[in-house]
Image (cartoon, rainbow, N blue to C red):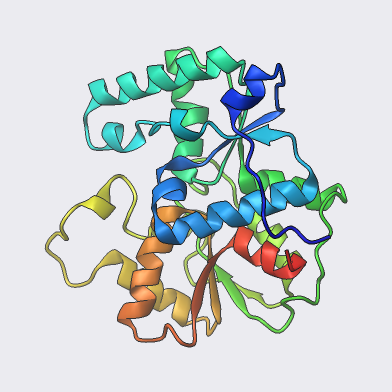
Length: 264
């Protein structure tokens, strides 16, 4: 089955027809506006279409979760954004949300309930790994067999939400050549972009955090650094460029690697 052009369903249009999809796919700010991360959004949408999943996006009704505002200390702005989003969820009767951003996942799952949200929040790696394990998504184990991959744990997936198994489970289905960095899982080094750090000028020090993490990744001799977070992708891509190895080492999101293996 090939999925080349995908029509993405919009929640308001389905609601007007009396339809209620099973999932809301929350795209997130990076997935909507960042040129590089739009490719991750497109990859995941292709997989959803391939699986014939009942879902929709909010489109123009989607706003920021408020996570950057809260991390930067603007609690009032965070609550305004969060309450607005919760109102939209209630309007459409949304109960299940799939996210591709760990920051969106974390705040929906762990912080929105304090403001009255009642949601089943699913990270896309949890969703994809479950589809693989249940036989809904069959990956060609030889598609990327010649590629060595190392995986960078996003802070808001790993230490914040204990999601370590699923990304590795998926990658091991894609290739037998998965290698770990010296610091991994709960000991993994941050990419340096979380907590709104990506939007700040560098602080005094001997080395940028993203450079330290990129060097750890390059020490594995992997040809692909797999990520699962827009901030991590930005920071590690910058590190790859700074090290002048962009011709030899690539940074892909796990959803993009699945699409490559499925040829969709």
